[in-house]
Amino acid sequence: MIRWLIFILIFGLIDFYAFQAVKTTFRNKWVNLAYLIISLIILGNFIYQLATIDRGSGMSIKVNLAIGLFLTFYVPKLVIIGVMFGEDIFRIPQALYRYFFTSGTAESASYMPSRRTFVSQLALGIAAIPFASFLYGMFKGKYNFKVLKYVLHFEDLPEAFDGYQITQISDIHSGSFDNKKKIEYAVDLINQQNSDAIMFTGDLVNNVASEMYSWKDVFSKLRAKDGMFSVLGNHDYGDYMRWDSNEEKAQNLEELKIIQKEIGFDLLLDSSRYIEKNGERIAIVGVENWGKGFKQKGDLKKASSNIDSDDFKILLSHDPSHWQHQVIDDDYHYHLTLSGHTHGMQFGIEIPGWIKWSPVKWRYKYWAGIYEEKKQFINVNRGFGFLAYPGRVGIWPEITVIELKKGSGNA
Image (tube, rainbow, N blue to C red; front, side):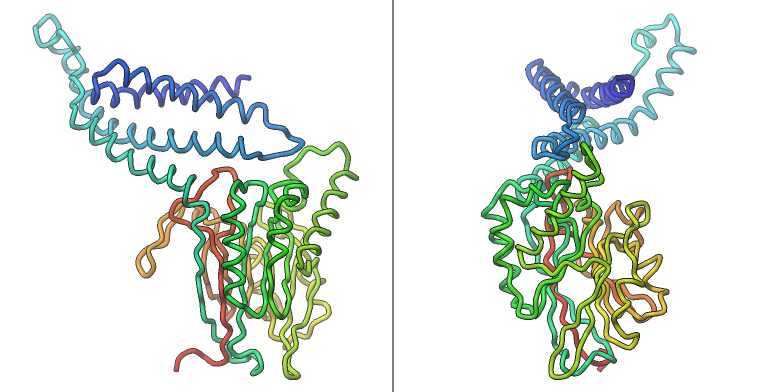
């Protein structure tokens, strides 16, 4: 209760401060009243949904919506405050001067200088940009699927796999979906890539296996001639739920594994497979989740125990921090690692050839796209679905297509 009271106090002050720009700009009691009512509804619903969240089912669409509306309305208010504070840097010293040095004069009748309408209008105008962006992200951006294509060159790629194509998807988070037609479109888009293999790098659900009941038939339409391979992500283990018993939690995980098999995925649990063509082969290795600050269940040595050190290796590992902390310096050379997990924070700015930025870069060194270290590559998929904030702004849902080519790539 004390925590929520502090929260209400902080955001009440944010509302009050931002309200000054609204009041100065519009000078209309009905606009002012509408602002106050909407603010109370958004903040009240956010607090209610989080305070009463069902720990037995986890994040629901209603909770996601409450989070989304909260961010949509309060991030712009922080922008307003930033602009207005710039004005107050000058207003407050003027008020102090009038209070201490002009007492008793006509000038001291109002110590605090009036707010300039222009500054308030500027604050509202700038704040309209994140407001519109977050709204767009919730209603359009979350299903704005993008196919990103890469060509990677390897001198030791077996000749038979020159031109081999892989489609990677990650972080489905089926419990957040609310539009079946959009997901059907995305599954069709994956199949249209006509890749040799499909790789799924974890987080099929938000918390519970039952989230996939309504979507299993859709994802069962995925097709790839050499098969579909998958691993588990941190959300698949049910660690963010309150279970009545350890047996119930374990049963949920077993059900999720069965669902993956029913969809058509070959789930790799610290294990490996070979894909063979014309007497040559590449190794597909999959580890259970290993993440810095998250579950560290994956065992890379166990996963690779049945392959040779000189095999061409593709590693599926949900969390890119695994690549950074264990894979790069492993005795085995993992030519290509496929990861996800970060979602690109579902928010950022990407202009190819110019800028790629998201706040998640402060948490993860490798957070979106292709990286190369020590002649090893990783692709960090931005995610297929979404979690918490029910939208995406600038960091769109991703279907990755990677073509393997033999050679140095310098020709």
